[in-house]
Picture (tube, helix red, strand yellow):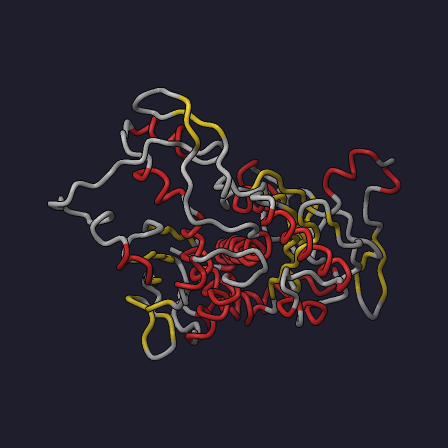
Length: 388
């Protein structure tokens, strides 16, 4: 099997989160930093709450890697929840003697009410634990493996925040991966210094007002091979698949590729990327309005997607709700929460984009081992060289 897929398991306050990644070729070099680096980055960002003071995420490899190289078998990763020790009885997989109080107060905007209706639970905690964005730690761990696979193919994935609340960063003309080298030095992972300071102030104001904030982030992939995805079937179009995986992240409500929704208000001559050719560079574009994807396939230009995140639904001043047992009006559940997680969401977006690009590469080039993959990629590059 050459295609790449992954799954996660675990609850927010359970013993830990598990990621299982299938389809990585044998012989891929992996270091602990490939996984743990992004787990640490996911915990960054002004506006995070108390949970991040407890957790210090790193991944344990339980299967699939030996002496720093993948075996070609599924890779299993475990991210331990340090906070579980405070929840051991409440989250025990087996019955406990102590009476555990049920949660009956669903939060507007969360999975709580729909989840208890769907599964027939009487305790909202049976839903909220898995619906928590804590699950994204497992995705980021899996994404570290995908990034390690893409790197020898010349592809890197990055992100930055472009809006928090009402504060927008000015549009950026990104030249290359080097422009993202210092993005994590910003407390909100924004590349514009003035906008970054204004975003911090916006978060501070929302926190004092017992509010949460959403925003927008962009994910960028450089060095993407042309021809990933396909125009021939609806479910192989890579822009559709990228939108799918990014929308799967908790609290995301919109995705656009390239100039996205703005294209709907332009004339055709201002909506597309004109094509040029030279002996030195082959086919080139002066613009990238399509976000590196045309006809459901990557074009060789940087892949760019912008993602909109809603404000978090858990508020320190809860919204109105209904007790699902008594049916009486009540305030929604109040739990430990963050004021803003848009900076962290960008890191999760990197993981999901990397996993989708890695899947597309595995589908196109196959190979049981990394040598097979690299030889297939080299042959493909030679075949399309005249086109470039």
